[in-house]
Length: 165
Picture 1 (cartoon, rainbow, N blue to C red):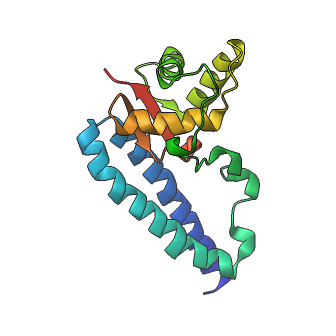
Picture 2 (picture 1 turned 45 degrees about the vertical axis):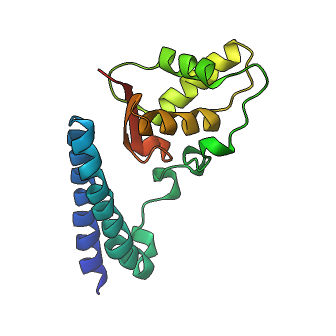
């Protein structure tokens, strides 16, 4: 493909990514069952767009790829699972849940914001709990239907959580 073609394709695909982000927010307003049903398809489409359409353009014209600073920083992706978490002595799951619920609202908030707020609250209380532990707990709370979550909760900037109505 010629450079001018790659530029046009890249521009249109980035517009499609922006439109998909708007669709993601619309999906966030649906009930949990509908969201879950649509999320798998949504992330499949987004993954195909990035991996199968944008990646070949960037392999040929690497200067078209957005700078690293425009991408999600690695530290906002957490692969820690709850079964890998070891709570410090004196901290129970119930106590951690209370702290998490205390910083949440019934409106959608980025997972990164809730993890940071809950971690800061833990620091205020003198509890050695980090944001990755909180993010792992948020995923458990969402899966167990105690809170609502949308997106891949391991990707803190591409997921959101809220208290159930």
